Image 1: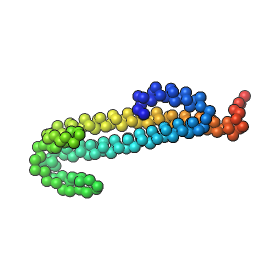
Image 2: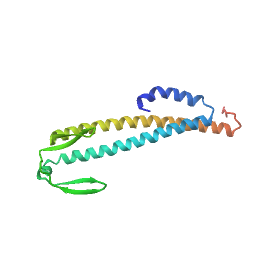
Image 3: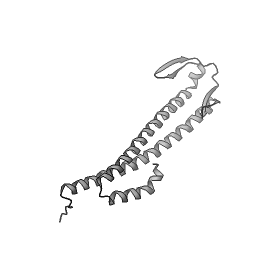
Length: 162
């Protein structure tokens, strides 16, 4: 569920939570939202990993002197690194999406990466907002379940204090 979708659904979910007198129904609803919360958290973590890689790439491209000297340490993946000598220091090969590779100047490559960084930061912010809304719904369900359990423990009658 996206943050935008949840605005309209919050009203329905809130009404459903408030009207529900079934612990089973609320527990089922809780499991659905808990799954959404966990999936959103995983999505945020995946985006954060890509964002960190982009930031590292941007930092490397910011070291033009090192690039021009042709002396870089390159991450080959799985914690394996290699010293690299760059022969053509004027351009970089950049994956521009769908595994299409484009040759770009260092400055253009850096601009491209910086745009992607901003896009990932915006997406993470959006996902965090949605996750926060899901967490609020989980708290409401938990509260309603505790109310139902308290009523059940007191013989099905609500306690009224005067």
